Length: 182
View (cartoon, rainbow, N blue to C red):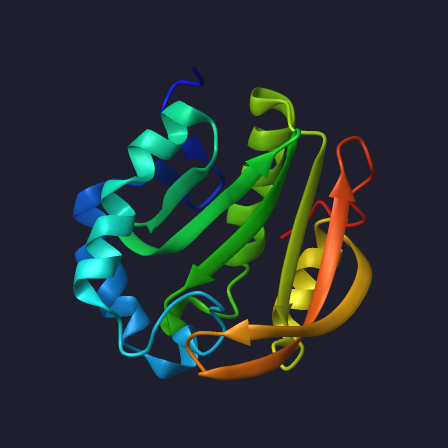
């Protein structure tokens, strides 16, 4: 099993998430501007569902099916970054931050650390990710991380309660990241 240890970047600590993080996640996801970009989250957050989801993070880690990290800045949780849906040495990258943290490069910094972790500590060979087509900033982050756009299509958005246009990306371990700076 991969040890549940924090990842450290220049400005952030990515701590393996735990059940107690649910309350802060609910607070962050109570902001429509955040949750509208999360395909699987409900708005307003479902307290029981969110608590149950966070309670399962340690088991997912033990099973090797997901690696989820609370993103901390100055000892305060500002979001979450994870790789889940792991199967056949591939996984799906996701991240979200509280709105006040947007525009500071934190999502890129956290995702960059997580990509390195799952490729070189976990041993995944490829990652997928996606974003709502109207969330162009997330697309910029993925491109900076070396993800390549592979397709677009519609998918169900739980938060929006409708189908949305989504852009999908892929990155293979060893492919160059075009931007290493934050």
